[in-house]
Image 1 (cartoon, rainbow, N blue to C red):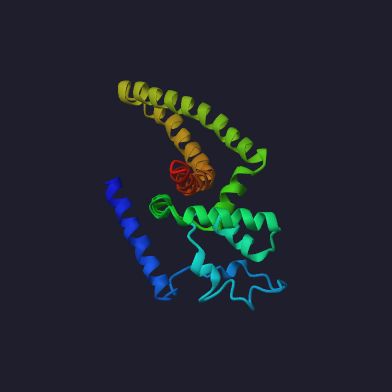
Image 2 (tube, one colour; image 1 turned 30 degrees about the horizontal axis):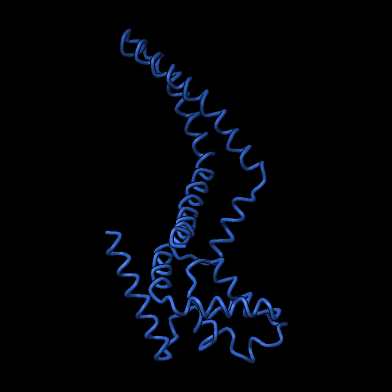
Length: 212
């Protein structure tokens, strides 16, 4: 299955290269989000936008990689940095198979700069966020214990002795648990959403690192 997916991404990758050769760039990211109104040259040199330099050379699959490329295109570099980049391009230009096998795994987990920024923001959230999680955890544990005792009491009194009042503690705990779950639900949904998104982003970087 993994080999089939990898082959499919290689096929898609080469189809994109054919589109570039035919000057069909309509489906490629334009990079317009990186345009700064006060910048002196991107609009004059078609650095970003339709049929731009960004569309022609962008092979990134991660949000941070795309942002780095945009930053390089938007700012002058020193002579030494330019020579280093030219040397890197020269070396990689001879490694077509390696480049494609490096790019293809990242395509499975491709994401935007916005997703990457969300990951960083989540990692940098203040300690109060974790304290809130701890507060709910300290509340849920006693509730679980009390609910278990209420259920045991219900079985003993209501089912064993026929005393219907044995259901009162159980009903009370069910109501309390319902209230707590309603309060915890937004936090749980936020955590799950973050985890699902961040796993995809981290998998992208893992797949690329393993190819280096």
